[in-house]
Amino acid sequence: MAAMEKTAVIQDDLPWSLESNRAYLAWRERKLDNYAQVLHAPAVRIADLANPSESERAELIERCRKTNLAIYRTDPANPDAMAVRRELRSFVDGFGLKIAERHRSAGEQGIVALTVTDAERQRGYIPYSRKAINWHTDGYYNAPDEQILAMVLHCVRPAADGGVSQLMDNEIAYIRLRDRDPALIEALMHPEAMSIPENAEPDGSLRPVSVGPVFSVGSDGKLTMRYTARTRSISWRDDATTRKAAAILQAILTGDDPLMLTAKLAAGQGVLCNNVLHNRTAFDPDTDQPSNRLFYRVRFHNRVKGS
Image (tube, rainbow, N blue to C red; front, top):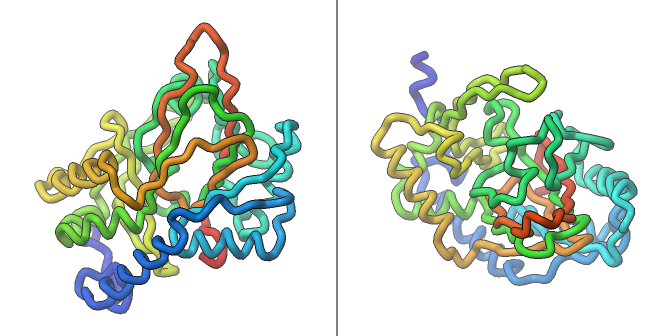
C-alpha cells in the first residue's frame, strides 16, 4: 500500500516533471504555438473515408500531433449506415488504431451506434438518450491499465436541434492548471485521486470500482487523462488540494477558454482524437417526435500513430 500513496516519478527531461520547469516551459511554448497554427483551420477534407490519401492522412496525424484532435469531413455523406461502419473501420486502420475496446453496445466492426434507444442493454445510459452529457474523457471508468487513448466519433445523421459538442485537449487543461499552481497537477496525478464506483451491468456482471489518477504519463512519455464532471459517478481523494484541483478544473471547463472548440458535426463529419475532453448538449427536445440522430463511436487502447 505504501507505493500507492506516492505519485509516479516522471523523468526530469519530460515536461510533466514538476521538478523541471525549464522542460515544461519549452514544451508549453511549442504547444501553444501549434494551437495557433491549426485552431481555426477548416475540417480536413477526405475524398474517400475508407481510403484516405497519403496527404489527407498526414494532415490528420499532424493535427493530432499538435492538438490531439482533428475534425474531418467527407462529401457526400454515405446514407447507407452499414456501409459507413465498414468504411469507418478501414479509416481507423490507417492510423494504427487496431485495438478496439470491448463494449456492451459494440456491433459490427467493433463500432458503437450512439442513438436514442430504449433497448435493455442501453436503457438508463445517457449517451443513448437526448440528455446533455457533461465533460468527460471516454472510458473514465476503466482501470488505469485499460485506459482509452484514442477515439473516433463520426456523424451519420445529426440531431435536428441541439447535439452540439465542445472539445478541449487534455494537454491544454494541464497547462491551465499547472500555470495556476503545480500543486494542483501533483494532486491530480496521485494514484488515488479519482474513484469510480462499481456498476452492475445489464447482463448481470459487475464492473469493479476503478481507482486511479486524473493525469498520468504512459510508457511512451505521453500525457493521458481520465475524468468525468458527473458528481454521481465519481469520488475524489479526501484531500484539500485534490478537492481544490477538481473544482478549478471544472471551472476551466465551464468557462470560455479560447482554445476550446465548439462543433455541431454534420453528416459525414467526424472527430479523430487522442481521447480529448468533450461534452454534448441535449438535442431534439420534442419528445413526441423520434430523434433521427446517429453517431458511430470507436474507442481504442492506443494513440493515433505518429501523434
